[in-house]
Length: 448
Ligand SMILES: Cc1ncc(COP(=O)(O)O)c(C=O)c1O
Image (cartoon, rainbow, N blue to C red; front, side):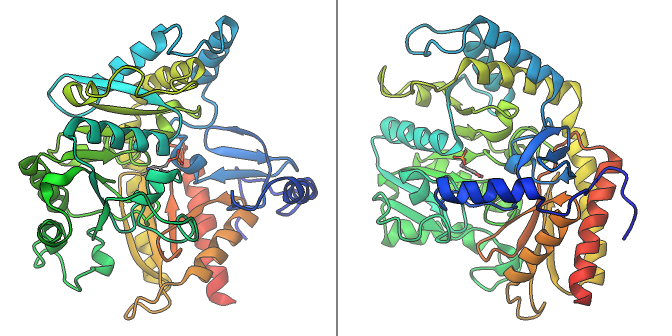
């Protein structure tokens, strides 16, 4: 095995303390919140993480896309400490505070769209999605919602209903909320119409017209929600025409276009928001994850006219837009600018993509390599011709990785995708070492 400069595995993984905590967890915590690794964290900084046994890892998961500015940046930690010394919570509905307003202004300014905007803060991505849907319904006085197969929008009732993946998100959780209709997404590697881009002329985007003719009238549809790159679905990047086509259809039919940037936002794809790779100006944008720099924060930003539709008291929440989170968010967005993380996302993304493509030449298991900016993934298949998914092999690669000091997570409706969401502050050395661990994992399972 190659000598490591950053990674330090001193006990084997999982170490004894992680094992002990794991068994205590099994006694006290239900199995619902699953674990991608058996590792208990002790501390983290930048793009590395140290466990309770003293093993140090390179982190390609970034708390599932939450840590674009890295683990514990000094500026974010300082902002939280300063706020904690003043007040922790008063509730925005009782006495409002400056950080909420400043951060709202920042998002109103930074998001695409040449029109007046307003922002409301919530806690989780799912909560942002729930609120975006409520706002769109209130504004349009319509109740139908369109979303996409393989899409993911969260685990609460409406967000789960919008999600286009049965396992693990919807299975056995009962009927979805009514009036939600799923459309095919432009998953070109597994085209739902068995066609090939560009000769398909994005037939998948046009399918919505069939839905309007036979399932729900377009004048009953309040909103369409879409991830500009599907995250949990397996980092599926649609052709530009796909998003443009559905956007134009929404515009022509008075349907609110909701751009779910929970995973793609805040510089991840090499633009501040992934939708900026197109000319689309979404009516509403949902953000979460990296917007809070590691703190609990989500937002809905959108056209002032739409955002202002619901009556006072109809939106919000006790903790929504918490002072610690708003201060962390302000500091995190400053860091994106100061550290030029948009450019860095492109550099990192190029490096990862080139490495994955080179690996694809060596390992037949890698069927597809795709991504946008620093949101890059590979889809594993047992056979490149039949494209039979290889979920067990994907799990084995991830396991070999964490055992050797790289934390990397999966995705995909078939659970056969390996995705990278490394903090954008990762150094070249860390990135190089992480990628070499991944390569070794593939080599080891090819030999087994
Ligand atoms: C696109 C998208 N929307 C919504 C969510 C839900 O966010 P949360 O887990 O914070 O509720 C996620 C989470 O991964 C996501 O990727």
